Image 1: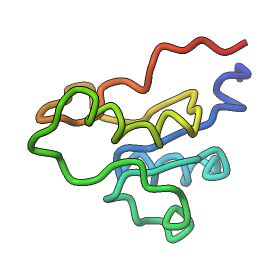
Image 2: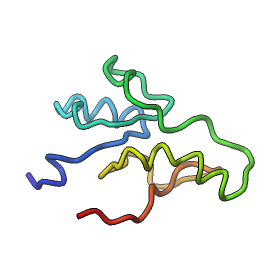
Image 3: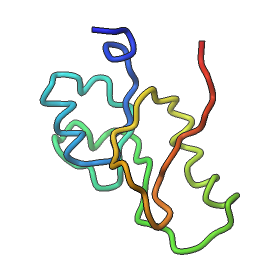
Length: 97
C-alpha cells in the first residue's frame, strides 16, 4: 500500500464514503465530513466542512466558505465527480513536500 493511501488525511463529502472508509478500518484517517455524514457515530465528532448549497455569493465569499476545508490539509476528498450549484469542486492546488 502506498504512503499516500496508508497515511492519507481524508475529508468525506458523501455519507456513503464515510461509511466505506470506516468499514475498511480507516476511520482514523478521516479529518472532516459533510453536513450530511452522521454514520457511524464516530464521524459525528469530525469537523463539518460543508453546508447546504448556497444560492448566492461572490467568488470571494464562496472561497471564504471553503477555507475551513482547506485548513484541514486533506490528501483526499471523497465526493461525487460532478459538482453543481456551488458544491465543492476543489480544495486548492497547493503542493506539499
